[in-house]
Image 1 (cartoon, one colour):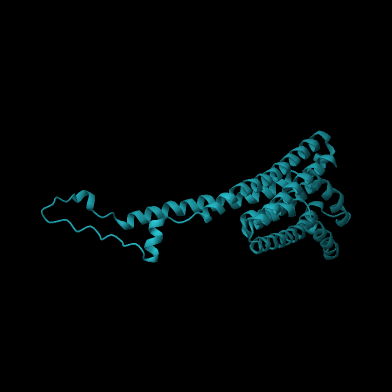
Image 2: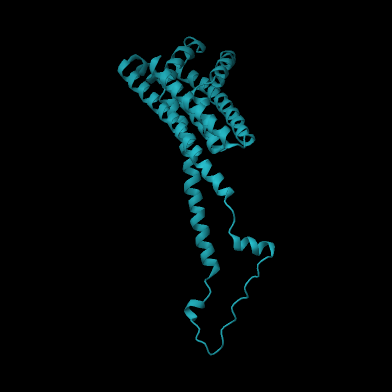
Length: 266
């Protein structure tokens, strides 16, 4: 049993490391959201591969491939989704390009004259207002100090809740993006239907052997997508200029549009 399983390892590595929509989406997520988002997207694409492997084991993938109408609907849906992600990348690069001149203009804006003179010591600072006399009425309600612990606690709770609500769904959205892009590609089901039976011995349990093959496919795919995510994040850190990142967003957007067109044509 170990020999057929190990013979599937080169096939799984070739399929996982081959540049395609999965790798493109992983690189895109790392460049836009950092390494963690790229890893989440790669995990989603690997999970989609497992979904198609299990579907081929139970006969669902064969049903999809054998029904031209169902195959076409799934293929068009996947192409539209890839095109949407590509247009999203192009739109992000355009918005970043428009906001760059405003940020540079704000950086070049001169400081106000009065704080600048006070900073260099050329303008005298005004003395503070003297304290109120005992005979003057004091508004005790206005002068009561605000409890710092309650304000700080509310601020911490509010912002900690904001971080929880923004960081967790963002990683889930990255995972969902990879999962949907992989599941909505029916060619993966056709690939597994054509390849996996070659590594399953005759007169054996097809489902158990498919589970074993997916046990090899999933970690290999996770490692491959993780390497793509780490490399893209490293490139993002080294490329400090926003112009380079904008052009990479545009290139990845056009690549995703090309994959969408190929999914429709083939």
